[in-house]
Length: 72
Image 1 (cartoon, rainbow, N blue to C red):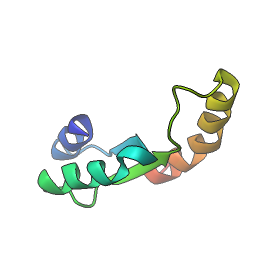
Image 2 (image 1 turned 180 degrees about the horizontal axis):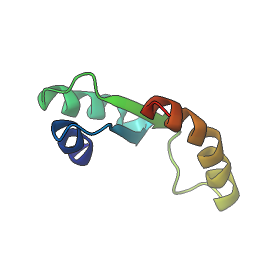
Image 3 (image 1 turned 60 degrees about the horizontal axis):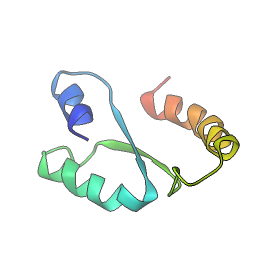
Image 4 (image 1 turned 135 degrees about the vertical axis):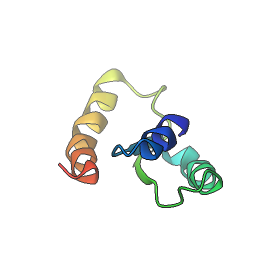
């Protein structure tokens, strides 16, 4: 979150990638930093206990949405 807020302050495009477990915390952190409009890409939780192949599939499914959120 900190890096995304700093990037926005530097005039860069930013998206914070979080898991669903931390979505509310991320929104609170962004609001506390004065960036309530910070764009979030929310991945399923948990990732660390999933098989590698499943995590790779999640990454593939979310890659294009990430690019769209970045405006690409």
